[in-house]
Length: 298
Figure (cartoon, rainbow, N blue to C red):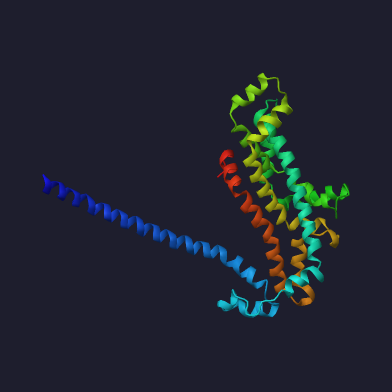
């Protein structure tokens, strides 16, 4: 019996050892693949960050062929950053972008939250038809709406103003859909209990619905801020006042600066514009995942 027991232990230990080796090999292969993918994604960011501390001549000379000099400044300089805030007035453009982005995010939250609550929790005639019509707006490309948007903004006197940049994007079909799905995911019992307690629509919305969709709101803040922060096409058309222009548009002008592209300044400006997005994404990533999961979007 002892021999059989020992033999059986050996027979079961061999496949178990093979399984452990296979799992270790699979984990090693997975780590290698993920490291390569991470490097491919990090490559342009690393190049942008290090090039921000090079002069334009060094940026061009170190670009090709790729060597360690492409990623490590041989003679680091802060001249690019200094020139951005002295000669090129980048600080003013940065503040303009921040004003427009914060205003657009705030207005989008108000519109999407109220509309999402109405579509998700209230019953009224024509609700589904109106919601379907709202979703149709998500399938119309911005380029197809530019001319009508320009005409409306000009008629209302919104050209070359901050509201003229963020107002057209405050009504977001995707944001409304996200909030509707989030409100619908909340348990019906909580709304019925509030109704039995005599709470009205606004009180139920504020005290019952809104606290339950905080993760979705955080996700919406992150998505809308990134969209507004990177908006280039519409501000290029709607804003003719250089003092109110956003940083993305003025930065593009550095490439045509008297036939001498300011590559060092462009990389420095790109690095500065990335910083708020990185901090916002790191601060809201936990809520972003929870918000997408609660709304059914993954």
